[in-house]
Image 1 (spheres, one colour):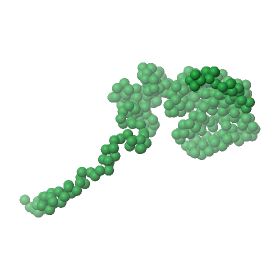
Image 2 (cartoon, rainbow, N blue to C red):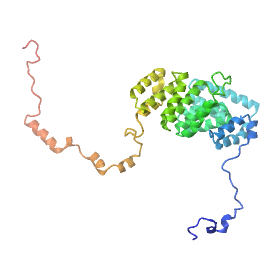
Image 3 (cartoon, rainbow, N blue to C red):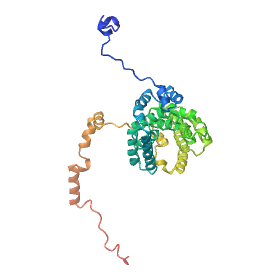
Image 4 (cartoon, rainbow, N blue to C red):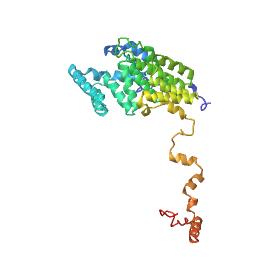
Amino acid sequence: RGRGRVDSQARPAEFFKPSKNFTPVPFSKVTDWASMSTHGINEPALRQRLESKCIGQDAVDKVTEQFKVHDKLTADDHEKLHNMVQQAHLLHSNHDDKGAEEIYNKVLEADPLDFECLTNLGKISYSAGDLQRSRELFEKAVVVKPEREKTMYHLAIVLFDQRETDRAKILFEQVVQGYTGPQSGIIGESADTNTFHNSIAMLGLIHQSVMNDTDKAEKLYKVVLKENADHVLTLDHKCALHAIKGHADEAAKLHRRVCNLDPNHTRKACPYLDSLFPSKTSLMHPIQALTVRLEQESERFGIGSRAKHWTNHPWRSFVKKMTRLMGGGKPPERDAHAHKPGVV
């Protein structure tokens, strides 16, 4: 009875006695909303991001822990850091990402909650392929300024590339729902029109490639193309939709249009080209270690790679030698008068 039971009767009494040195550790801290408001963070917007699971409590906790470092800065420190940020912006605009990254890192060491450094360094990290660092920077930026919907779009792109499409979908939806129009008058708060259209296009891609809902994707694309018929990202995703539905000619024609609208399109990730080689085809096999591949192959495969080819067999070499000795295998002699001019 004792070995098979998992209830209280099968456990010793000491199991229920808490240790004197034991202190329970909560999974996450309770958000200090008063401190958030004191530091200028938009409390209603942050609550909405947390409730909709755009960001997690861990990101909020990281920002809360760094309030102490931020509060030690004086007015002179803020002015000095502001000048450094402006210098980094200039380098970033001139495509000197390495120089800008060095300055951004120095600023974040002094003030880990500088919003502009968090967002721009997140972009640089994403361009360099460091998705995890880019994600952490954008998550902190969303906590610092949760009303900035364009930052949410950047975070959603990173999550999509990390294949966390559920969270990415929520973020894209939040951007679309928060869009107030091209003439909202709130610079930097609501997303711009292009980001709004990009978010709808990404939602369409998630519906068609992840959720297998091509009808919903087509409806989303119509919304964007009705307002902007030349929106490149939407047209690119629609190419993939045509390919999925088996309309190869329409997809190829539309893709040529996309390349004409964006000459640099061939250097970017293209859902249309991905749709031509789905994961189930033999061309897109998973990458495996060489030892694993050799173990899966038959023994004859390994022996055959070491066996002599039939063209190098000794018997064939002997036949070739005998043929030459007997006058066979030689090219016919050329006519001495065939190429002399004037000779018929």
